[in-house]
Length: 219
Image (cartoon, rainbow, N blue to C red; front, side, top):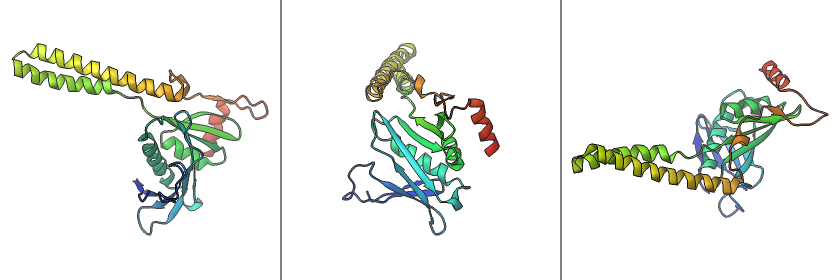
């Protein structure tokens, strides 16, 4: 694994070579500046191997670098890297309420607040569903134009191209969504939306309004 990932103001480098690696998730990535003397900014790692299409991530940024956008850039790089791997659809992270810099970084990197209590917040980001139908519809239209010119019948050519392209796109989308549901066990994505409610913990229960009020006060 002699490579690194460059994103924004940071570069991520794994701490293990391929001979030392047990699994691809058995890695701690160092986060360094891309400019100047490439100072060490922090580290990012996965808490465990993926389960049902979900993997959990965590990171730490050294205090002197927390005001910069290094954490956001690192998270975006990790998201791109994870979602390029087959069978992965969600990245989660649990954050202590006191770690305001982590919460800010997650929100700026596209993670969504799911639920939490007085002590922790749960965030995640979900891989977008495939959109082959739209792509193949446009390709079918282009092919249809060419067929129409070839056979001197534009209406028939476009109609054939659009129908064939749309059918291919729909088939690919159905297959992708079936693979997704087989791995995650979820046929619908309602649970992926922002929950906007608090865990049912009688000792630490707080309202959504209180959560937002505290966040506004911390900013």
